[in-house]
Length: 191
Image (cartoon, rainbow, N blue to C red):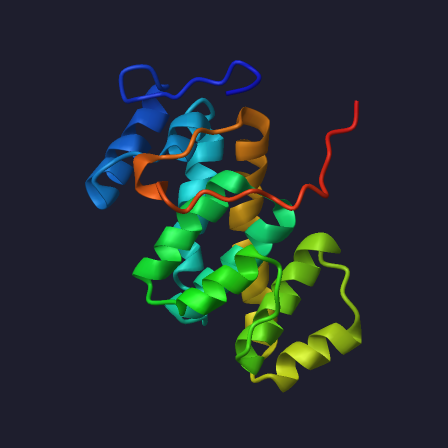
């Protein structure tokens, strides 16, 4: 880990974070290292946990949500989230070839899923400044304005986790074994 971050548990976390960590433990059966890092800031942990829950309410299917997350994670080069979401995507029954394609930076064979991948990637890399043509292509694939805005919910969720993992160099959790990932390496810290 970098920058002196602590992997908190309910005994070391601030009280407000400890309550959230208890809820994560109950829901998942363990507390991911990301949550343990975020626990340093009750506001950051609450924001991430809340956005995670809100993301479940988007109009996307579980498979689409996971594909968009993977596309965002790829662009943000978050090795921790790519490992975790690769396995979460498998659990959500995402086609293993689609998971592999996104991890490798390749297009998806399914046209609708590829449009989602491309749009989520552009929203991420271009910080939401996408062209009318980009939006029109996304809609032409079968999405609507709700989906355009729902991508923002997913991007905001991953912004917190991806950036926190970059800052802390969060160690992978045991369930990520076998899904490790090496980022393309386009992003570099500027001294």
